[in-house]
Image 1 (cartoon, one colour):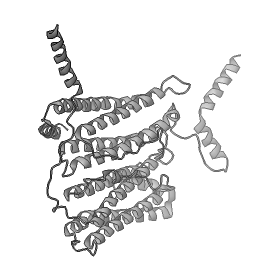
Image 2 (spheres, one colour; image 1 turned 90 degrees about the horizontal axis):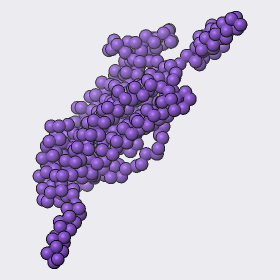
Image 3 (cartoon, rainbow over the protein chains, first blue to last red; image 1 turned 45 degrees about the vertical axis):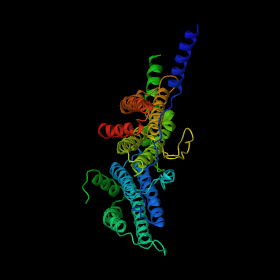
Image 4 (cartoon, each protein chain N blue to C red; image 1 turned 60 degrees about the vertical axis):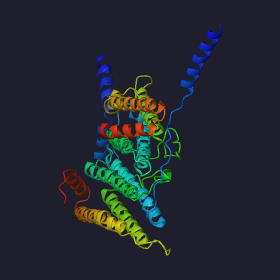
Amino acid sequence: MKIMQAIIFVIAAICAHSVTAELQCKLPAVEIPKRWITMAEPCTLKMRAQVQEELNAALTYMAMGAHFSRDTVNRPGFAKMFFESASEEREHAIKIISYLLMRGELTSDISTLIRNPEPLHERWDTGFEALTDALNLESNVTSKIRDIITVCENPSKEEDAFNDYHLVDYLSGDFLEEQYKGQKDLAHKLSILGKMLDNYGALGEFLFDKKLLYGELF
Amino acid sequence: MKFLVVLFGLLAVSSAEFCYNDVVRSCKQKAAVLLEDCHAKYGAIDAVLLNLQSYVNDHISLSFDYLLTSTHFGNHEKSREGFEKLFRKLSDSTWNDAIDLIQYITKRGGVMDFQARKTKAEPRNVYELYEIEALARGLDTQKTLAKSALAIHSEATRRCEGCHDPEVSSYLEEKFMHRQAEEVRKLAGYTSDLKRLLSENNQASLSLFLFDEYLQKAV
């Protein structure tokens, strides 16, 4: 009888242990030096804000793509261009995130990095209007990047604040290069479209759209 | 009698030509050329439009969600490149799906509304998750997307008058449902694997490292 009780007790103990065993999800934090994390805070905040800017631009382009895909608007060339621009802006945001990760940032407050990006508009009257908006959008993004450069060159008057050469170099070389090229491209397209519309109105926009669709505009 | 049958037949045919009638009217009269019936809408697109728009917005929000989770695993404290890649891939695929859905909505004659939401999105505050927590969230969110596709599919059946639209159903089946089933199965498999690895005593650190290494190749 006592042996039976002992056996039952042992079995119950084993079952209880396996049922209440918990997953070891959390690993202890590792202490590593922090001196290599040198981005100044005003600079970091500006870079984080730029992620949101790029994603707002991405969604605005997506809205443009959606508008020109409509049956009653029917401009597949514009739609194709704008959907591609949307994905490109998202890639820019991801490049900024990668840079911040490389510099040791983004270990906290990740939830505030992207806050419900929204398109600036969802309807446009003409292709010309949309291209104008796109060019203005790009100019805004460019001036924001130049703001970041200004802040990161002279973050503050504190002792250890320094001119972040590498970041400034990266932004100028990679980002600004692409921005300037993109702006020239949009201005080029706007001029061509504007001149076509002057004499030929609806036909001008129709032909321009097909040139965009088949990649015949450089 | 035959005359009446023919007359009604002609009337039925002519009343089906809405766009044509609009055009004929516009060609005859000097009035604003609206051609209101010359659109691409037919079938049950109006019945499922809000659902589809909301589905696009869900995809866009989740795309950003996954991007943030990927960012978290990419920082130097977590250093989980496999998980980073996994969530980055989920982010890319939800973004591309959103664009695809927008193109589908406009193909069927609808419009996209970036504010359309069937259920209010719950704001998330915490992206700093452990590996198995992140996998669990990934699995839950992918299942939610899959279930939403099933719900839209069920709206386009003959359950209600004018709701039958197999083109919508077929699109959802081909482009979403099969792929979603595979993705859900993959994530459930990973979660089961990780559950077993983390149940063993004192093996978590090495298990997580090796599992992450496996993910780098598998993703």
